[in-house]
Length: 167
Picture 1 (cartoon, rainbow, N blue to C red):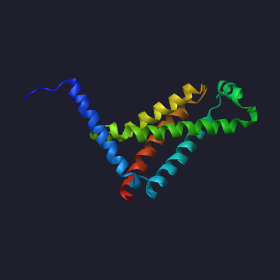
Picture 2 (picture 1 turned 90 degrees about the horizontal axis):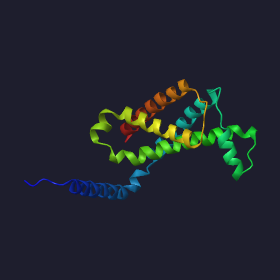
Picture 3 (picture 1 turned 120 degrees about the horizontal axis):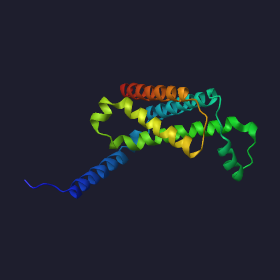
Picture 4 (picture 1 turned 90 degrees about the vertical axis):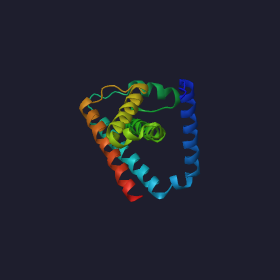
């Protein structure tokens, strides 16, 4: 039997990925069912709430750099801090949901079945650290951040299981 080169394996992977996405496009109507919409709205609300709890319970949180950057575009006053906090929370949540949506097909079946919680933990960690670094948020409570990572991963894990049972 002839051994396949690395390029052949890559080509096979690309073809399988394209085939997967074409199948997903055919099932687009089923994908945006009521259950899918409810699940994602629930995930959005709970993750925003959890992230707001981290931000509001952090005593030394500073968003001065973000305010300075936004003042170049708009005139945001210091009393509009809650809207800034909402913007940060929505940014983290949207990035989390986008990463879950796009990375799910590329994860091995074994990993998704046996290590799903760690997958959600990694997605949450990457998304919150990315947004906090890009927006230059400093002074957040590490304890509340760790609690956010655990609770949000647990919630995503449970919501995924519960909505699969409904389907």
